[in-house]
Length: 478
Ligand code: NAD
Image 1 (cartoon, rainbow, N blue to C red):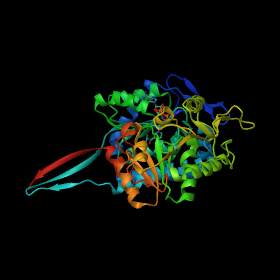
Image 2 (image 1 turned 90 degrees about the horizontal axis):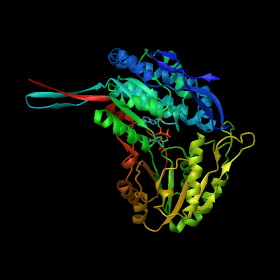
Image 3 (image 1 turned 60 degrees about the vertical axis):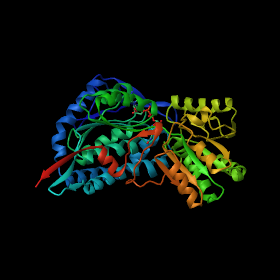
Image 4 (image 1 turned 135 degrees about the vertical axis):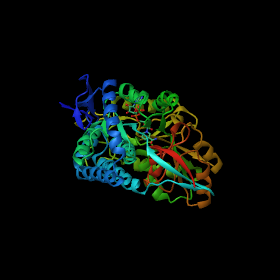
């Protein structure tokens, strides 16, 4: 069976303790590879390598750094088939999605920050007899910790700006989906990334993630994952005065008004509900619909969702693949049970599916639930699966109160052709991102992140480069 390796100081090596965790293929529930069960010793080795590499990398010219990151982007693009297949097997997502979104976006992350760093600048503040200028210097060795839902996409979203800004990195991918990060190690070697600049340590969150977080000399932690783990990281990192960026859970509302472009709204709402089996932090899971079109929407939405094909991720006609892991599959099913106990009506789906030849895999039909109140647990807690609720509203004010009525605040989607209402609501919604008449339309220059329990700090564009640098003011009197 294939054994993945850590990437430390430019080499692929076994974990010091020689221990491994099982890696599952969600499409059939089988173990198909082994991933290092690394511990503090490996994190320390990675830190030492990153620390030794820091001086050299930080003083590399921006042109040189940009060139190496662009080469990594090129090699990811060339490896589209191999990486796409690996991502789909590891995560359970449809191969078509991995090849059209995850892998191209991972290449774009490197290409974008390879270019962004060439445009990054800082300010000068002039006084009558002096001038101040601001330096933005790399932090040193930084830690990145990422989740399983968009494995390579979110892994590279952190690494690319950290490296572009001149830091060296100790990176931890999710132990549930480590394969593409492992394959990226070889790509970095081939691209000529100097040894020690990026180190990838595989393993359990409590061992590797927690060790990176509490390491006294790792200067910043950029984390994407659950709110529960984000809290743990903040608890450890805050008293150490580390810089932290936390991208966490969501319970995003969609507000659909009767005056929307109905057909566009309907197609997009199917995508925003069930893409990647609903396992995208930006998926809209609470759908509020103006009462006058509620029945029509319910009928049309249910019809479209029932037509989605649940099946093995490698089949080209599969719309909904497998859920990433058995524990997560059980969690999602438990929320469907809870929704019924809370008085919800299952309008579509609501059950496990056993595709022929893949009976041991973890499949759940796309599920729509009606008849729930806004404040029940199903509508308050993050499910992070192919489950959405639909609820009617009468007025804009009522819709706003319900949309803002959770502890989360990552994104929101508004559907209306009334420009005044759209802007009025966009200003009042408690979230870091608002889409009007679209969903998941991303410009990598824009700030990305959440408010309330969804996040602290912003990623994307110069926000990410600012996070991964320390500012210093220098004042010169004439
Ligand atoms: P998770 O929090 O369980 O794990 C995320 C990462 O943290 C993994 O690499 C894990 O090994 C590591 N980890 C676990 N315990 C740790 C600890 N004590 N210290 C340090 N690291 C630790 O999240 P997940 O289940 O992998 O991902 C799903 C979650 O991610 C959902 O809540 C989803 O909303 C969120 N998410 C958020 C965004 C965003 O941009 N806001 C994007 C994608 C996913």
